[in-house]
Image 1: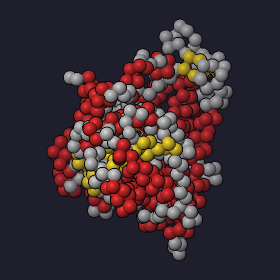
Image 2: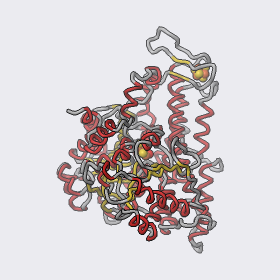
Image 3: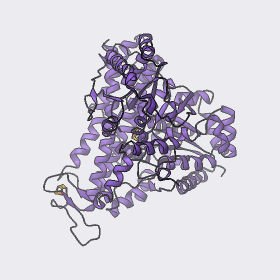
Length: 624
Ligand code: BF8
Ligand code: SF4
């Protein structure tokens, strides 16, 4: 086995990583090596630098200090650190949702030229959910009113955020009982920061219960608003074919990549690359055309709606430039490694940051606002196209050909594929053709062989007749492995194979970006409501095999609090507190009917999840 096969299961990653080293480029894998051994206190979650009486740490062996300067013990320190992770994840998704809300509001005020309402039916449906009567209102007026109603969800005018209405009654009663029903999106994040200041909440259980409330303010608040507004403004995804891996870059085209999370910027870039004048310019520069491809969740957004191909996931982002074929990368925010600028120094790639809140070393900043987005997009695409002349064609290395994948499974698209209601899915679950469903979500993490966790787990699950829904970076992994085409039904068990054949869908469905985990919980709510039970009774589970991000911790928490058993492939920093670990891995079951497990081995994780699903089936009296 070559060194590179230890890093990733993907050919494109292995080959470009080798070239990166030949070119003298440093990657996340190299930097991880330099960091090792990583700090043991931090890994266990027992270091605290919340105030400057510290930094403090607790000796996990019981010989050294057992309390910080303020007197906080391991339970308090671990719980506070975990709560702060969750607050950051919730803030990231929810601030992304807020940016979409701002665009919707500006569409209503005619201040967002270039943006329109692409799904007016959905605008009307969501407005009704917010108690705004769409009758006699045009799209613009409705956009304004819905935006204003959603803004209230962010603040403190309400005692619960609006989309809680989607959640089964029994679950909301449970949340009310434990006082974790989220009141306002920003309020809960702000309260987490307050509670975890020195000298506020010093009970690890109550800190963690508030962290649950904070995560729910993301899953049913900021993220759900983000997803629904992206659909309203950019169109609700429909199934269709696209392509994944580094082979989506074209040797004879100008290649432009968009990276980050928000579709606000990339949508405009998408318009600019189709402009006739730009194509003309590309031809003058010797290129056959302009090729747009995505990375990470911005890529997921474009792929879901426009079938724009994806060049890679998190650990591929640095490697794209090593092909020597990328004229520009345009980033918005989240999961953008600050190393990109350093890699770009070795090639001709131009990098652009676009958001005031996300600037990076060695990137040119071109500020995008709803007002100027169109103009700025044209400017960047023009510069990128001109940059084609600087490409050293003798050094271009695109090591693979693309793999086809099917994408676009919004909740609406799934319901449509089923013929108008969830009933056929429920019938298939009841009959045991589909044993259950699992959301496989999250990132890449250089601590885990790239994509091995995702692909291993998905294969294990579908073989056991479990339908898989993927979001985020998992999608690229599953796509590259050929799991997201209808033909992948051959890898599924007999029941799932039959259903996939009937509907002509893959056994692993791409439901979107990480904010689109809200689509998965929305389906879970709809299934529970249709069957008339709480979510924790359903044969469902979630998994984040290669997670790295605080956002993934938040997602895991709101999945668990929704009643969905969640398996993590990477240990969260909690082992320094026996009490917190016990609560996370079993105690929460008594509260929410679900808890966490940590299992890095994808085969074992698939077994764990299958057992869980079979237990839920048994309890419901369904055939095994
Ligand atoms: O929000 S899966 S590495 S890109 S955090 Fe980031 Fe993780 Fe990818 Fe998307 Ni999600
Ligand atoms: Fe140390 Fe307490 Fe300050 Fe944390 S909050 S750094 S444990 S004194």
